[in-house]
Length: 534
Image (tube, rainbow, N blue to C red):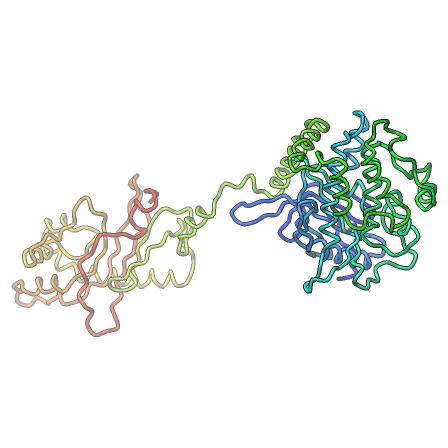
């Protein structure tokens, strides 16, 4: 860890693969955010992220407590405990990733219920029974060798029990939990951790803590849920602590609720006994006592009743929170520019077929690098001023001049009719093509429906030309290889564009093999391959 203070966090900030959306809770030294995890192919998942506040007092000890919380909580796997998924650090910020719980903390349930006549007795028993199961999972946590770790939560309070809108109670926040089997130096001598109103007497005095300490706090919650009153609360925190440490027991629940069940009252009074030895030894023992006192609320099917009560109590708040989260996600998406993006990866790949030109160009060009080898590219409308292109133009011009010098006598011999029958796709006069077709039994003249394709003269054409009678004093030009052709490319409106150069470079071998008969094109040059955009 570095000594620099962590940066200020805000909605839209990223911590690893997580994106902060909304702050949902803030304590003295930490903040909890609603966030989303972003995965591949648009996968998203809501999570809760806990971070240490910038400028927290004694940040080194806070970091150690943070790491210990992650280590302990990540090992507890139970439906009544909020799951811990990940621990990360970015730019000096430690963050803990937890399960997103769509619900309310128990203190909000208590406050809302007080305005509506209080929490029904059966609902309160059910919630404490679920919390007993979560606490047992924490207290029973073992190491790799099967030995108990002796985990004590030390902060069981209404703020740290979440009730989902589906009726499930979940224990959260092991920030000050302690594994008693490990020597921990995080707690200084005389230091008290937890909320005063829910501390056991031994916790206030700084004594030895165990599972019974957490059960004392759970007993206070059971008392408050079923009576609407706190058993030890005074006019100020000091008086509350004095009432907790006093030898006298609090007033029984039946003094406030006339028809309070006697069996349930025994469970409540035993859980808040001042002497730890007089309390329940384990959370499962307390749960069994609750089942004996009121078996109905602890049946599995009763969760649906709790869910209906939450719906009645909070009305449209679940949908409002979901709408707020959607708005937060849309706001972050707009800030990142994702919502306005309409170019897909496939589109970008299609545009990237250019071999050196502009993606916006639709004028194709064929450059024959060697006999029988063709490369297709989509160049820009503006030629790039590079030396290699200039050299190719100079060489092409020289080759064109040479080709015209070779073809001139043949054109003169063929007369005006041959001029009319010569196309830009072949440098060979039509008279030679006619003779070659008679020798090979096929028509080599360009067909109107076929696109113009530049081809090198084959040996059969040269042989057909050689069989013709020669005039005295004339030179045999048919043996010379035809080197190049330049033909003007015309647009649809008749305007002449830059010429399309087709260059044939001779092979390094002494004699090039005969060129094969051209086959039908199946590459990207076919107009149908790209939707006819050429």
